[in-house]
Length: 172
Image 1 (cartoon, rainbow, N blue to C red):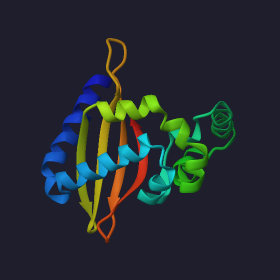
Image 2: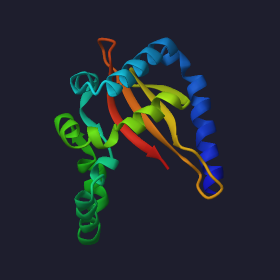
Image 3: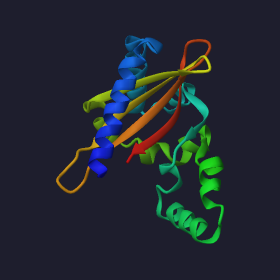
């Protein structure tokens, strides 16, 4: 069932990507993604900050250390509104906090290499006159016992034509 759902999601995203290609020039997105990866490989945190929004939506940032995972477990066990607190507030990490506490954990050399080497799927959409692009990279290959996984990087095109990174998430 999980594999079927993942396959459906991948096909839907690919279809939307093809349908929405007019919203974001492929060359424009490719240049932006290549620059993003170059900045990560160079560990250029200032360039990363400049291409990022004021906050980064990042669930993994809430649990990427043992103490953070313990805090999240405590919240889930002791607060009936834990889900709302996570997804309405905690998941939005201020950019300076993201760079100070999460950047090096998430963007380690092995992960950056995976992002550079693996195939990407680009999906773009327009909503209320704003163009959003989502870049999916398979970061864990499927096996007989695991459906695999992807990371999704989301960018918003600003009114001055620049791209701003605003989310990193995982599928599943």
